[in-house]
Image (cartoon, rainbow, N blue to C red):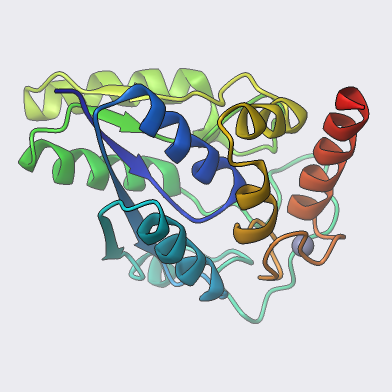
Length: 216
Ligand SMILES: [Zn+2]
């Protein structure tokens, strides 16, 4: 019996990963993090998608992150940068987020004897987030195995996929409409198509446009 834990946020990428995991493993559950993100609608979307898919949903509180690092996803006083700066990652970067999420996920998973961890990070549309890179994930996988003397495998089905290809995958998995209407990717916290102009919406929208064009 193969078991997997999906690091889940209710966004396009992790939702696609969740259905990828359901196809590839016998038992799947989800772990979601409250890190003090300004839009609670993300957590509601995550819970509702997991429950509708009949999966166990666990929410962990990590809002201590807000105390030690500042970024526009948790700090209400900071505006989300609409354009990616040339010389540094955008202010939507939450330092260490993926490392912490995967580390907490691993601790949680080992306790349930779940060796497979699934995360939706990717570097095809490289956003400037260092902890979305393949090299980082492989390095952390090794560190987690050493730290807990356990054989985890971190799966990153979207690592080399463009947004267009991620839309194609959700269609292939039969969840295109669910992803299109029920997920929250928007930095301004609007479900589905979102605000349309923040960087996350632009990526999502352009990918969708290319996919629909390719499909037509
Ligand atoms: Zn948006």
